[in-house]
Length: 246
Image 1: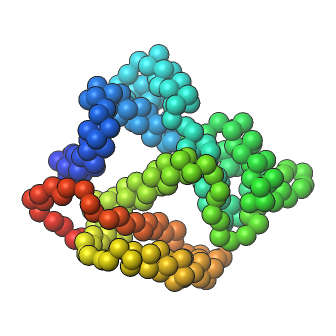
Image 2: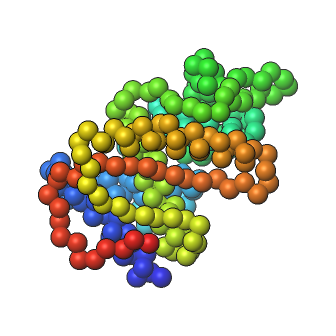
């Protein structure tokens, strides 16, 4: 299993290496980012500082330094957009208090969540339910968050890669056939590319909303992660040793 895990990890690191080379990021800086990403995941899992020190095999002072780096430089996409997405996902099932939301999202500070909830209520995405303990609920079914374009794109990348991670774990590691991975390569005319966008907007997205509506309040409903992406492949293609359409 360790051999398979390392092969998967290596496959995931190669795209990061390509990005680093194009951006001329030094290997030493890539190593630092990898360390920070490891800490970020440990925090997302809710590990305490002492546990992080043991898992990452680093000192407590290093854990503190990584925490500071994360807050100063790499939390903006999540706090500006990703937090909204995760809050919406939690409230999709039922109304919750700020405390319950904070418990479900240990990677964020409770003050951050409280502030974000207030802003989402002000923006009309959430509604406050008064009572002994204030709860929050959704105001609609489908959301397209209007956030700073750069931050939204970075959060979209985070979400895409999380979906890839779940597909890898479910399909490749667990062997669960319910997870589908299909890799397509085809040609299209320049003027036809907008038909892909039209298909998503007019057919696929409405279908997803319909499926989600039908699954409401069903005990057998399964949360599904789906990502759709395409790009004109005008970069120089590298030679593939093998291809796997799993």
